[in-house]
Image (tube, rainbow, N blue to C red; front, side, top):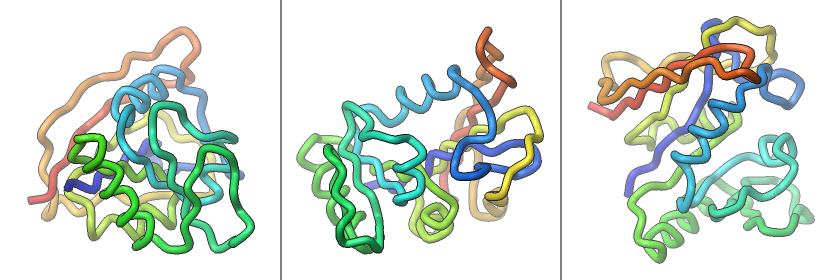
Length: 167
């Protein structure tokens, strides 16, 4: 079972600002939907709250320290370990071989050592932000795919999706 990170990072390393994405990129959101559809997704509480609802077509698992946190359409768990156990079980039941970790910064940092794949989208801009994510060490990852995400009419920037796999 592959644990995959799905992260969009600006050229300056920024991934968030004030609990939100620091850019408007409908084209990237379409790519995100395509990559995650039908697969369990793991996220932190702040990421869930920034989205505002459970994402359809995916099992939503939220890691939170708040025992009262119980939004509709979400499985809330106390630890990342619980999230991974639940996600792997759900993936097997659905016949998929991948669990998707979608943020935020703390969850990415905690799961990076366990990840076998990263869907790394570079947003071709440098917006201000308060959450960053460093590039994964090149000595541990190799590129297996790259595709441009052209700037659409409603996008602030263009982007490039790169798929990295652990060496």
